[in-house]
Length: 250
Image 1 (cartoon, one colour):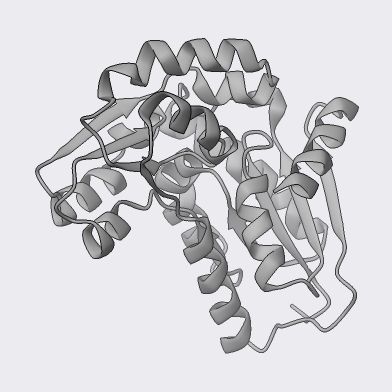
Image 2 (image 1 turned 30 degrees about the vertical axis):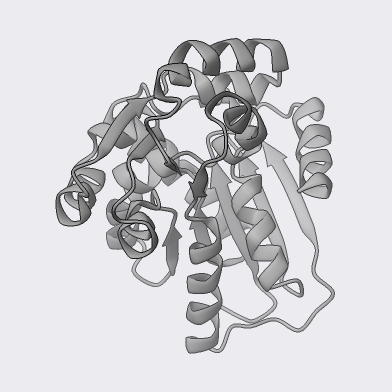
């Protein structure tokens, strides 16, 4: 591994752009390659074995792309495959996103909390251990089946209807919102329109700080110009266009 190597970032779609934004903010001189697996999106309804195999295939591709570190910017993939990948590729640092539930414990413990995540994340052992350790006993768990897919497709009317139907009942009940999928920060505004003024928690800024620490510790910080490449498993040009549009907006 060398300093000029790329930072590989992957997600089941383009939602991980919300993670990449925080990384670029903190590490603008790094070279990034972002892999969107739209062919297999969403991951939330797949078995653990399927998710591990999909992630393994992506990692093998990113290794060929000369990646010095890999960021798993998908909560479902992180909870289901991170440990497996670390064991299989011990020479390669993996940085995995996690639902920011511990942040609620640290900053707003006594307030009622709504955790929005995929069905796979909420059912995962990793998340349940986190919940058991930091539970404020005022927490609602909401598996948002199909929300990431709607955000991926970008139909604003469908997104608003979905949110109204699924989170409307939490208005006045939840003050903290844990965004447990990297797609969800893209609809923060719409969530706030329904729930009113709430406090959002999202794991991306903490991940970016951890990534910087790992690169410093391993003497892998780059001092180049910083480039961002994008790949999609279906080769969809509209995904690439939307990815860079969102990246500019954030």
